[in-house]
Structure formats: C-alpha cells, structure tokens
Image (tube, rainbow over all chains, first blue to last red; front, top):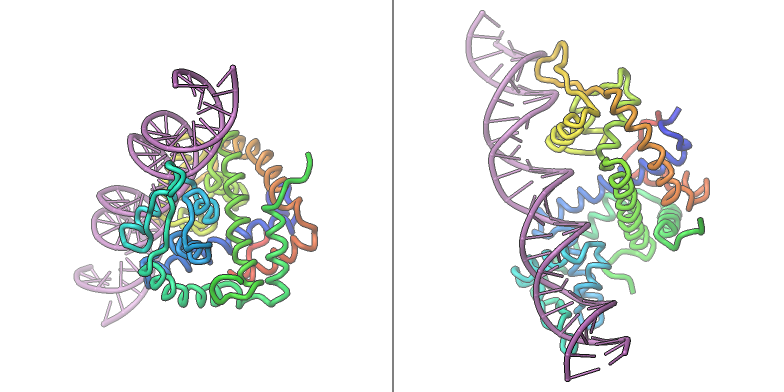
Length: 151
Length: 151
DNA sequence: AGATATTATTTGCATGCGCAAATAAATGTT
DNA sequence: AACATTTATTTGCGCATGCAAATAATATCT
C-alpha cells in the first residue's frame, strides 16, 4: 500500500521527480562551484545572456528565464557584476529599466564553465537515459508547465 | 540553435526537469503553507513518520528520506516539535541517537494537510500526464538516482 | 581496560532566496 | 498640465538551508 491516496505510478513519478532533481542539481551545482566559482543560477544568467540578441537582457527577462524572483535576480546580478562577469547599464529609452550585458570576461568564464557543466549534465543525467526516454521525459514534463486544463 | 553542446532532446529534457520541478514544488509548497502552515519538507517528515514502523524514526533516517542535511533536519524537527506535531525522545539503547515520534496532534494535522496536498499533486502534476507517461517518467527518473523504496 | 576511531546529532556561521514595501520612471486620464 | 495608475527594479527583512566544527556516546583495537 502506498501512502496517501496516490496510485503507485503517481507516487513513484512524484518521488522520482523530487529525487532526480535533488541529486542532479546538487551535484552539478557543487561541480560548478568547486571548479568555476559559479552557482547554477549564475551560470544560467551568463548562458541566457550569451544566447540573447545583443548579449544583453533586462532584469525582468532574466529573472523569468532563470526561474528566479526579481529581487533574487537583483542580488545575483550584483554578485556577477562585482566580479566583472556582467555589466549593468541604464536602459537608453526607459529610465526605470536596467540592461545586463555579458562582458568579455564573463564570456570567457562561461566558455570554460560550460565544458565541465555540459559534461556534468551528460554524466549525471542524460547519458543515463536512452534517446527515447529523453524525449519522453522532455515531452511529459513540458506538459506540466503548460496551460491549465479547465476546472 | 540550442545553446552549449547538448543535443536538442538533452537540452529539452534538462530544462523541462528544472521547470517542472520549480513550478510544481513552488505551487504545492505555497498551498501547503497557506492552508496548513506546513512546508513541503515538514509535511514529508510527518508522512514518513506515519508510514514508519512505530510512527517513529531516527534523525538520520529522516534526513535521508526527506532529502535534507542532518543539520537542516535538526532545525526542522525543532520547529515541528515546538508546535507539538512531533516529539523528540532519547533512543533507549543508543545514547547519542534521538527518536522522533509522530504525535496524535501531528497525525491529525497530517490527515488534514494530506487532503489538499494529494489534490494539489494531482491538479498540478499527475493529472496532466497519461498513465503511460507517469510510468515512463517514474522509470526514467528513477534510473537517474537508482531504485526507490515502493511502500 | 584504555586509547582511538567511528557514528549520531547539534551548533556557529554564512548564504541565497522570496515576499512585501519602497522607489522611481513611465503611461493613462481628466 | 496635474494626478492617478501601472511597470521595472531595488531594499528591508526574515527564513530555511548546508557546511564545517563541536559535542557526546558507542565500537573497535591492542
């Protein structure tokens, strides 16, 4: 008998999500921090900036993509800017907005960190699944975040 | 088109995992906290205790099952004990160990919280997937960490 | 039995985060 | 043009968490 009123498969999927996330994220975070002094969120900021139009994004956009609250993003960008990996400039036309730019230093740092991080994702996550499983997991979990059903 | 050197499916699965976890956990945590003054971890402690042999577990076992560090568990149990949901007793034979017991109050509280939480898991997670997807996700993510206890 | 290592748990401390309120600049209204 | 509303970002604050060191009790070894 599984606990609560969840079915076996519901319970297993739920626990597997929690456990997999915990293990993988924790491991990757530690690797990134030990080898490159970057938190996973910090890495993600650099990554999003690099793939953005002019290697720059507003605070709001950044927060949204990195799955962080605006206030959290303010502090995170503070730390990255202090280290010269990122630069906060005023928005040319909108006086309240700030634009975060990826610096050359940040670009270099990202390039180095990406090597270990991509290796890490493969080692601790994707290489343990078949291509079919990867697609199944991707499709399934993407429907979780998609729009609500009626109720 | 996709950043770094990950394949499309690797990237999608990875992002889907982060996003799904973030959204679901955040939502469920808030629900539980708003309606029952329980954090997800706190709920999990009560749940694990209920399904344990004598409705009691040692700190170490608890920490392991709830995916928390020993020190984190010390404080979490402190908070739950302060509210009378749990009781910390000395281990009868081992003087360094502590045994955490689920109180009647905690049992009642858990029963009430479980209703909304199970509903939440269904509403925000499992009901959005087919039974096949649930099993696929469970099996896939379990291989990330290794097999689970089933209950 | 006495010294040493191992184990279970708890503190000291620092960190990263989110919420709510504050600030400041834009937009909308009359 | 003056005033209210909305939007983008930043602070004030508190909290849960993990790591490393401290504590305390048990196991091991000779």
